[in-house]
Structure formats: structure tokens, C-alpha cells
Length: 259
Image (cartoon, rainbow, N blue to C red; front, side, top):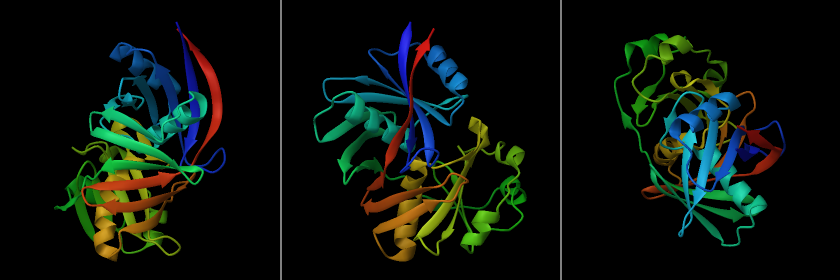
């Protein structure tokens, strides 16, 4: 069996920026165990598979050790492949996923994703989460992930969490965030439970961050930056119970998987 693999840097304007994703188009679904093994071999934060349907594409995402319900950067990378390599001519791609319908359109040489919100709620901070950071956050919220709000951007940049403690949490991972200086807000994302100590740019995190910061800043349209080592700029807009997440992508590699 041979499969085509595209490695795409999402939320990037040139290679070695943003978040790399392995994109594998399929004619039909492979066994789950095989898709997980390929993701483990790729050893990227996400390997994404999609299958064409009569109305668009079904899509699934795998970290090196588990399937997840939603991934933004790998969805952006998939749209990039579909528009640029597979001859897709419609204006909008309709992905069906375990998180519902996800829409992606091309716009100004980039891409705009329309996702459902995952608005967070204030919660008590778990003891192991408080111990994992040297500086106490201003607030703790939860949704798909825990969200720690820090007093300033520098605290987010300087954070060096204890990954073994973060891996014990009951939710997917931890987002840390603060109001930005150059951008409306900044963030970092840690998911050691899924084999990703720090994710370079996490599109799905913004389904949680956009509702929070829209309320805090009193504005629906924002520019954000995930300040990981690679980093990436993300356009953000709140649309009621959905959000727009925008960014660019570039090709790093095209290859074949031989099984």
C-alpha cells in the first residue's frame, strides 16, 4: 500500500514557522490502529486524514498517541492541500468531524476557518496545576482544556511548567494566556497527556480563547499570537456560537508512505 503524505506548516508564512501537520488524503478509512501507527511514526503533533463525500470531506485527527475530537492547524493544513493539490474548485470546504461541521474558505492568500465555540467557564484551579507553574495565574477556566490567565505577557513567555504534573490532569491540556503588547492576546498550549509537551500553534485552542478575550477586551475581531518557539499569528473573530480563525500555510514536504 502506498499513501501520499503532505507535510504542511500551518499558521505560517514560510517554512519552519507555525505548526507542522502531516496530511494524508484517503479514498476510504484505514483501520484505526493503522492510522494511529502512522501518526506515531510521523511524530508530529497531528496527523490528519480525510475522505471525500458527496457534500465535502469527513476528517479525523491523530496525535502520536491518541485520536482527538478537534484540531485547528491540521484542518487548515488539509484545506491547503485540498485547494492547492487536489484541484478543488468550490469556494468553501465543508468538513464533517466529531466536533460537527467545520467550514474553511480561502481569503486574501490565506484561509478562514469557521468552527463552533468552546466557551470556557471559571473554575477552581486543580492543586497539581497550581504546582506546575512558578507563578500563580489571575484566573483559571475550563472547557476542552484548562485555561490559565496570567497578569502579563512576560509571565506567559517565561513559563516553564512541570510536564509530568500537567500529564495527570483530567482535561486535554493547558492553555496559558495574557493580554498582549503587540497583539490583542498571546498564548501557549501544553498537552503532554497526548504526547505533545508544547504545541507550536493550536487552532482549536482559539475556539476557547476567542470567546474569553472578546468579552474581556470588548471587541469581536482580534489578532493573537501563540508565542511558542516557532510561533504563529492567528486572526480571530467571534460570531455568536461560532468563531472565525484565520491564517496562512506553506508546503514543507510531499512524499509517499509505503506500508
